[in-house]
Every structure is written in structure tokens, then in C-alpha cells.
Length: 128
Image (cartoon, rainbow, N blue to C red; front, top):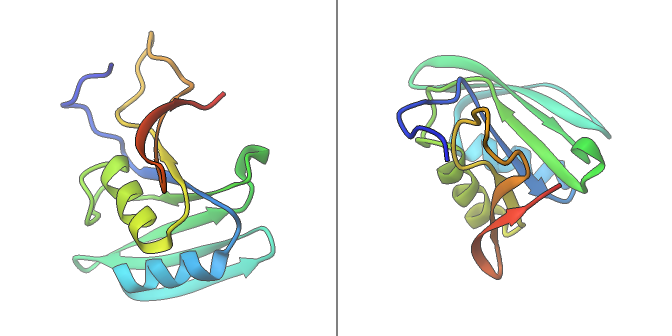
């Protein structure tokens, strides 16, 4: 897989379902000084703060027609070291299946290889 020393410039996880209210509440519990910039039937945009630094979070329902909501954090200054730690925290808080990548993608990596947290445990899946 990819070099563990490389870091993504941001984080993104995919949460099963479309309960934006629950996802926004979770994010508001995690971060300080939160503001919902916009929210519609298709998603939401928040501005949150971590360690005093503002950054956007964008939620998109049914991202890529997958039945999962994308949660994209446009920052590396987050309480989680990587997508997997964020995914595990989201699963623990929301109780919904969460999918994420486990490293920085590089040429030669399998683009359909994802990590999943669910009530069945943690596992690597092929999400084509």
C-alpha cells in the first residue's frame, strides 16, 4: 500500500444513510465555535474550529449514488490522525456503517480498496 509517511491534505469519510441532523450534531459535539453555513435536503456546509483554527466541513448526501453521505474536512488540524481514526469515531458516535481509505492513494494502489467500520466489525472491503 502507500507510504505511511505521506499525509492527505484533508480527511473524508462516508457514513451510511442520510441523517444529516445526526451527523451535524456529532460534528458540533466534536468541534468548537460551529456555524452551519447552509443546509438543504442534499447536504450541509459548516464552519468549525479546532485549536482556534477555522475550516469548512461539507456533507453531501448519497455521494456518488452510494447511499452514503460524504463528510469532507478541509483541514489536517483535526482531532484524528487519519481517515481511519475519524471513521472509527464516526461509527462509535453515529452507529452507522462508515467507509474510508486507509492511506494516501498512489499510482498502483487499488482505488476500490476501502476500510469499513460496521456492526459486523472492522474490515477491508472492495467498494467499486
